[in-house]
Amino acid sequence: MPKPLVILDRDGVINEDSDNYIKSPEEWIPIQGSIEAIAKLKKAGYLVAVATNQSGIARGYYNLDTLNAMHDKMAKLLQTYGVSVDYIAYCPHAPTDNCQCRKPQAGMLNEIIETLTADKNQTIMIGDKIADMQAAQNAGVDFALVKTGKGERTLVSSELPNTVKIYNNLQELVQVLLATDITN
Image (cartoon, rainbow, N blue to C red; front, side, top):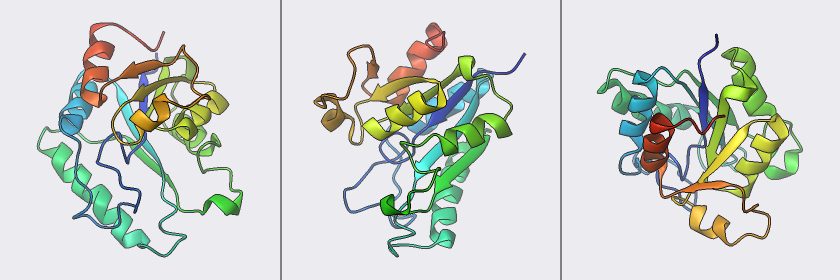
């Protein structure tokens, strides 16, 4: 039986977000409790993946080496807990490129699910933006919103259904997920 899968948006869920983009490993600062929350998921037997729009590459704000350095920083922090994420998918395209990977499209989520041979019925996407929710809907997986990052702004969106599960942060969501099972 496949393991349950948690797909995380990166900026605003795992690390602090900025309207000016996260452009360097120095600017990549984990949200309090997020690294520990990922470690708890992994130790509980969950697959954990990241799906992140990174249009800063197309915009020329940073390059692929810098993106990899940011992900290496996250990996090193997770290694202190003896865990790692199972997969990182990123979209380097600009919003105007009309690609199939950029959220709200489902391309990255489908890539993750296929690569990890996960069951969509046991998959949840966690994000802080409407585009994250739409990507989850387009991929046919569950969704939960965190208030970190752009989550507080998203709460006032008329596009957010009142059925969406909302948590203060990733740490709180993981506590609830491990105590219950919000993927069913």
